[in-house]
Image (cartoon, rainbow, N blue to C red; front, side):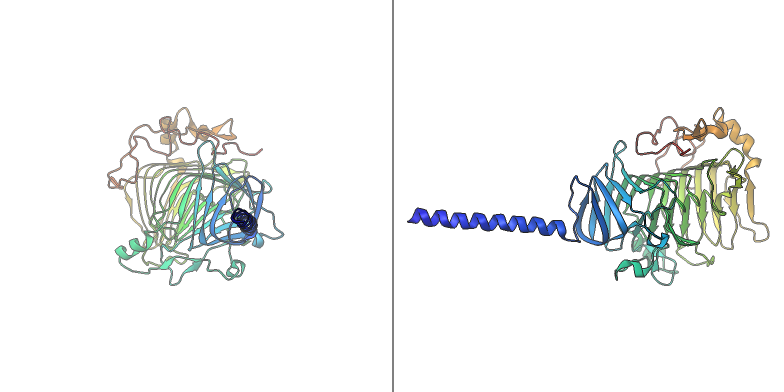
Length: 450
């Protein structure tokens, strides 16, 4: 009898545990707040919370918001933004202030974001929102997203820090939104309206604890990398033929960046205000802290052989304006009609050891804004670049060449960078040379479309 009871109880317990496991598995699969790692393709939409792990192929159906949760994306994952009826509805991934993302690909197995078609602006892009300092009076809603699209969730970014002491600004900026490493974003940049577009990578109030390394923006319809406030630092960024600015800074961004490449496709078409760099304190040029002040070393901005593309003129290699501040060292700008445009009351730029610009601090004179024509320095560039010349960033004119315009000496990390340990001290100017061959491997899309 005892044996029968034990067996009966054991059978009941086994059945109960089995049913519980089946139910839990089913619930986890259906719960909108959790997407488990799996090999099969999945489609995600709306708001996700909790712990989410993506691998294989993931489709974004509209805007996906990570709220009160963490998204981890495995190497080799491909995320595809589904096509929508209007640009305002465009698919995109938005990491809110209460979310984090860990997308860590490898050189041979990157994480790739793209649209369903190889058309610029066919989907939105990646947006990361943080609580870093901004020079606006209130928290902001990022361009390309409306609050109505966020299903009642907070999609603002930034901590208002107007004219606060730098120590308080630094404290607001000392946060992390996660890690992006070996990530490529292709054909992003859908627009709600003119001057209200998403970018390939958009960072709103993102803090200095965030890791941003080895990222490529490929053929986007707006900016490649746009930073609104915060102090996110980054290394090894590539902008390939995006329609507008390669690197855009605004609202008090104060991060550090090293090893940046911006290159144009001479057969491409671009916006009326396309720049290698665009830097503003804010839209009205207020002289208010935190001042937009990126610190950059080892940048290469490569335009085209004649400063035009597809019959149109490309604008500025770098534009510093509207009370912004800027530190640029050990860099190369070429292939634009104007290498640098520098204007705006309260603006300040230090450009040391920069080929294509001038060395030393640039004073602002409202009666005479600084505009340096690239033709004024072409002879120097050609001499330093030989035998690469303007073709240095291209193989047969249509593909990225991993070595361009090497200047093997002359770099200096003490004059304007104060030997900051963030910056890797190399001997050369520009983004790369044969010793630092960092754009190799499948993580970089090197070929321009025909």
